[in-house]
Amino acid sequence: MASLAHRRQWAWYVSALGYRWSDTSVARSADADVFRFLDERLLGARVLDCGCGPGISSERLVARGASYVLAVDANPSMVRQARAHLRHRIAAGSADVERGFVDAAFFGALGRTFDLVFFKRSLYARRAATVSAVRAALAAVEPHGMVVVVHPVRSLLQYAFGTPARLRPHTAFHILNRAISLVAARLGISEYRAYSKGELWRLLSEAADDGSVQEVPTTQQAYAIMAITACDQVCSGRRAS
Picture 1 (cartoon, one colour):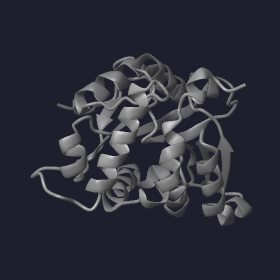
Picture 2 (spheres, rainbow, N blue to C red):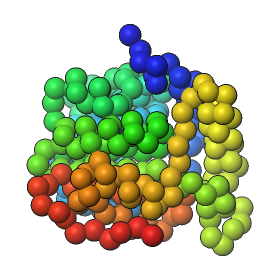
Picture 3 (cartoon, helix red, strand yellow):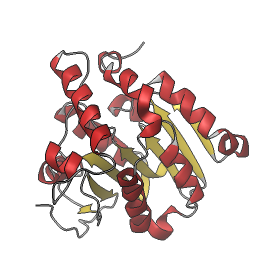
């Protein structure tokens, strides 16, 4: 039976109608920065792509060297699109697609571990639930594996227009996407939380018991990108401002 959080994500059904056009230059730039940061870590890695959407990033993860990607999304339309997009990877055994709401309970029932857990535009639940989900994700990665988070910045000006503020190829899509999400949240039919870099850092640090969080270098401005290394010792990282 679907959880309350699962049932309430109705904004995702609206987003799914136009998600195929979400692979803008800024989204591709964010992916490229993640791959550059991961470098050889990605070679042969088993990856869990949480909130995979139409499977675009999942495909790139395999193309960049991941040995296997499990793509998971709660929205049935996204799952259908991901299965179609990844059909050749699925046939080759290097990818699979499942429908699921990725929260702490999901990880508790997962029964397997990964080298990388990837959250791209998918941590929109209330803060406490998000902390629990990330903490559970860390428990599901191999020693010295990683959890990587790509999350929209809270500032609409930064998210849609950047600095200096000007019209950009993704501006219209980001404004529409943010508007749908906020209206749905106001109506109580969906959850949507966007964070500043500092807020995201504090959230992830709480999930990681204050250690091993680092900001991933990026030139794009619409998304904060951060990584948590699953290790016993506190890893060095630069605190986001």
